[in-house]
Image (cartoon, rainbow, N blue to C red; front, side, top):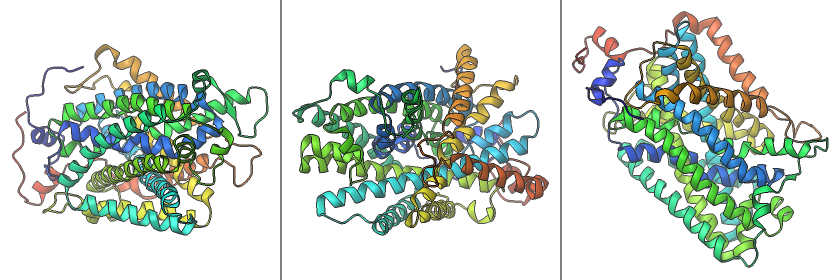
Length: 509
């Protein structure tokens, strides 16, 4: 998938895109992959959302559904990666939209950027709150701690503040922890699968692991089982988010035009394979489906571990998942802050002058890191009173991010002047790109449909409301104000030259 190499350094290529190197470029190709792989985190998303598919669809949605969604998401990742290779900049999705749009460049950048920013904040909130739920379950099993809403929120605060601090200390620490995280996930999955394969006295028949359908949604109409399976695909689709991180840290990655697109694709492919093995092992180990689905622990996989291999060993398996989720949240804050930094660098965030600042000692956008931590915390606050309100706030994550993912892919397909980077899809570009677009349209429809019956205030699917709020707020702001001053990505080399600041030499044409 590689073309002739681009005859320029990373810094020169960045200058061609209009930016001076400000962030420290210290990530290897593996570290770039590790950031996205850590955010996808099969030991986070697949564990914390496992109960969704147990209720809607059952084993078929969990195992075969995971593979099917994984294949479709791989198409999305491939299409995104091709664009990333041409434009390896921290702005990523919204920057690509501005570069590829033939008309209304600023408007495309504005809306894609806001979907990306708010989707990433929502994902960070969901990941760290999920980590808090898992940590609460672990502490309840290991130390008999009573699990309460207030304690779970306090644990969330400790986790997200720790992630803010770790990201503040510099990209070298982020690189080290991301590398450790990737290996923790791979070895952790191997340990969990090995234990669940060997220790339990009883396993579900493999035919049920792959083809059994469960429907506890409350829907009873003809075809309700098939509908439940479709709804249950949300488990996999939610887990497969965040791999745009490889693009957001492109300005910190060596050989970014090749390493960043590879990071996007490989993080998804490895997650598809490792996640499938993990989910088959967990589903194979179910002892009492209904009791484990409705466990008081609030986390069905935790109950499955305990019932299958005993209290102590089951608690140890949950510990593996808990640590992985801490790593996942840390990587999410990294990607979220880089996108916020780039968006602020182009003047799109209120107070952009503050959020675009880079700490000269650590080479990290410290202010943007704490902006993302703060907004994520605000999104989780309603969980103290109403879990439904929290779910409404975070439901924008999947649809919001995927709209941002596929916007530049659509523009790339409609732009005949697009010049591929050194990593490209060749003759497969068009079919893969259009498949990615069709899939995102389908999930945007599917995931706003009702998920439970009867439909009440507590069971209503608030995703459509969340999407409408984001679109509406961004549209109103655009019409009333932003269209008058937001011109799309700003080239800071030009900006610095206008103010007489020293810049790196312009690359040869």
